[in-house]
Image (tube, rainbow over all chains, first blue to last red; front, side, top):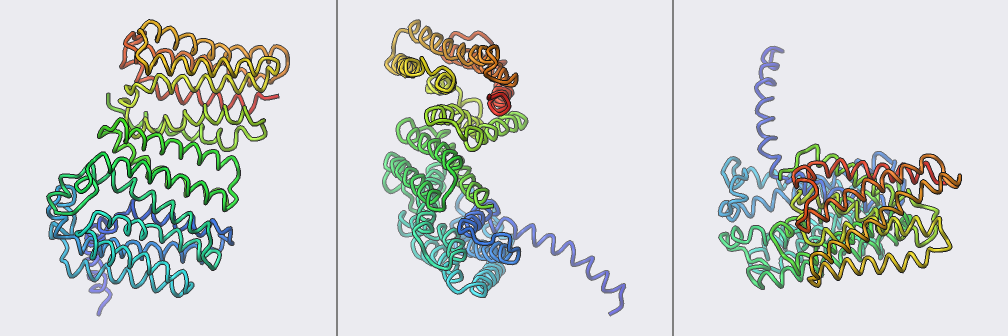
Length: 300
Length: 203
């Protein structure tokens, strides 16, 4: 192949790759993946291991990014039929038909195998926890329970808690109570996030036939559940922060942010409005991101 | 009223400054001032985040009058406890009574005039203390010149809190739009003055 032909091929390939990336990018839900990745990095750094070991930090980042992205893509592949029935998700590449189901499945499997494989290569126990997260998310949450029971979110929460636990396990080489508290903090935070979302888009979920807390138990019980899980999330995060030896100043800051979360959770319970509900949904994300940043700053 | 990107940036700056003050800026003080300042700057921090998330409509909530009272009260308690040992217990009790008075008149449906008077009195006294005490301390040489920035912050937050409270109670001093448009810069400036004053002015 002459150089001119090769250059022409690359030029033709360039726009094709860019177009694929543009199609694939929404499949990984970059914000959600980024947030979960930040929990994994915070879990790893919380061990106060040599975090400036660039190779390991890059390894954690890459393996978690690939595994989390992979599980998200596989979820989208599995849920493409119900996504097509919901106004919020109808335009996703999977449900709009912009990408074929087979292509999405291949992409999801490739990312997942790469992510888990890299994690196992770094450390067997770390790899096991990363794999558990992927298994709980794709198989238990999406494939098995999501269309059967509203309690599926509990397993979605367990899956979401795995990156931080994996990071912690990699850092200290075993499970410990601090890692469990961090994981529980995420586990209890996820209902605050998802239940608020399911209240806002209750009609969408109803149209798609997905059971949710609001459709099964009503709005009042859902709000109470959000309030209780927010309290538990805040308690667990403060316990975990204390456990890693966070400085009092940062503990105070975490306490203030937790108080804001609790205040909004109680406002959602006792003076509910759509605005407050969605405010809680957004604040919960900021809260968790801030908590992770605090852990990272603390040990850096 | 729509919140612009600049408003959000100003509020984020205010929240970050308040977060700095809660986590680092008040280290080394005794327990009660730390608690007081944590409450005061903590309320500023969370309020900033909620304004970014919910927009100016968040200021319509009835609880805003009570929350906006907490900031000057807690900051003034911290200042008095730090600098006026002779009256600190008395002022702490007065501040608690003042807060309860605002809470009760706002939540138990007291006559509007009484509710307005209570808020004005509590804001006024707390604001005066934040404004005058640093000036007094500077005059006595017990604090650096930069401590006067706390006075400036006190004047601003006192004015802002009163304007907001009167607006919420249906007797606006400034038009709603003008007040809301100026709120992000006022909050940022107030917090910056407090943080700078405490950091560079303490003896």
